Length: 148
Picture 1 (cartoon, rainbow, N blue to C red):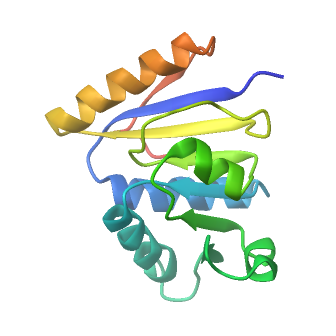
Picture 2 (picture 1 turned 180 degrees about the vertical axis):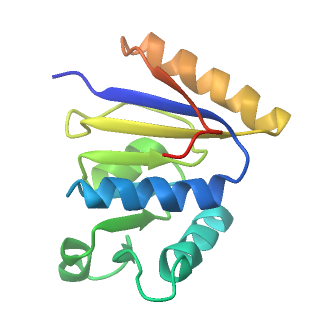
């Protein structure tokens, strides 16, 4: 089965959108791996703990003990590239917040890409879209201005 790829473009607040999208994936009982630049992941970590007064999304960092990662719905990866992050912490759903794509391992059933409003983010998103096409995958376009 080919990996399903969804691009959310024009996202006004990538961190807040990532938190909402992560919550939606977790509610569907799908383990999630989140990859991206360290500063963005740190902000997502805070959002996952504090988005509501009485709840949070169970998550761990990829350097946590394996038992903690298994118990966590979401794992945040500090790897600097998409492919090695997925190889080190296989999960069926990957949320990418800005790492360049290498290969898409067969263990990934769904890839989610968030593209912000900044010109640099838009250019990187276009390049990422082309990488998926080169791998024989057809991304699905979603408007990031709409709630996940």
